[in-house]
Length: 257
Image 1: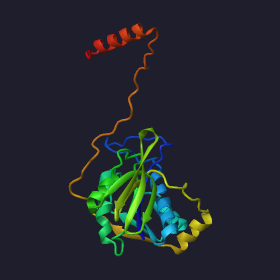
Image 2: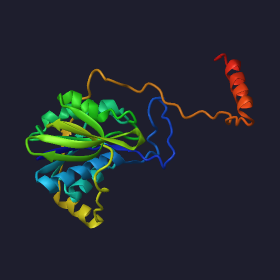
Image 3: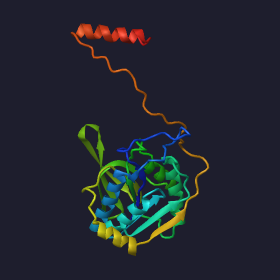
């Protein structure tokens, strides 16, 4: 079984984020990038499937600061091949990076076709979860997201568990190949010693492929703003009649009632 995992670097929200001078991107002066947590879970799920059914795991990521360390760590964890897509402008949006990476997949020898493409179901800079659906659309494959359990059965069939609000989960069967957005792997991402990562840096190789930015983008960020400081919420006390009367008064004062 061949599995492809898409990883990307995202801003570390522990650090203070600042809007750049163009007003549409984050300032890179003090920005620290880390691997997207759900992408890391996608890699772990791919490695679990490899151990269970044999096969190979290939990791693909767009070029970004610190991404080499993440790719070598993926090799140390058990990935068989890692590929870095270059040519993206600094600070490009999630949609542009995804379309560029998806278009570059076919240019790498032996990369496609695969049985599964796994990625995180969302990221701190992609709360709408665009990566999986966009890749599926580019490659003409089915997509299931918010997945917390995934296995492959004989006959080219995949079965996954998808989470819904309220603690409800649904079981889905899908024909392979397919794209799956992982929310959480069956087990936490495995720890890998630093010595093993250093060994991967010595013996492993990161393949590089040039990506061509698309002409028309499905989505582009035109403006970013930090949250505005507003007045504190008004806490309404009293009985039900008093509270209802005050709510109506507030709505009427704002022309909403």
